[in-house]
Image (cartoon, rainbow, N blue to C red; front, side):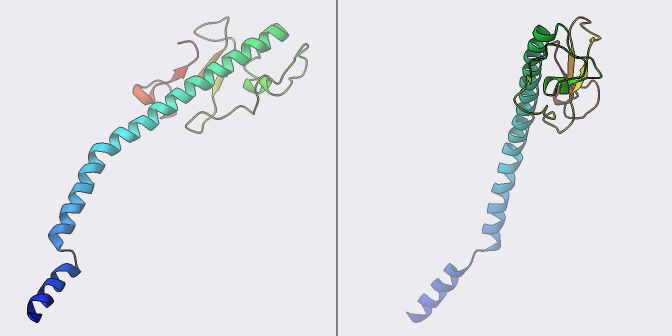
Length: 146
């Protein structure tokens, strides 16, 4: 009787190597199936955030133009929405509640006026995840005129 109890208690003490391998396999399968989908959602969220910020800038630029009669020049940049530029009358800003943020990937937005694609309007460009012009998917540029 005593021998039987000793064998049972030894069997309950630890986890076998096979049990560990099964658990590791399940974790690896879970990571392989779920992680790519979760990472893809993060990139989609960054693209959505960049579009929302660009729309916010375009709204603020519209208010700036209503007050001053012109959009800020390329040299003035988006900073003109926050800080009064020299030699600009009728500036009623700030037009943004906070300083101009970086894009969701931590880089500055590109501002041009007059624009190349729509000359009478300003252009705001976010270069996407790769930080290079062009690209597809999350690497694609996010622009104000599309």
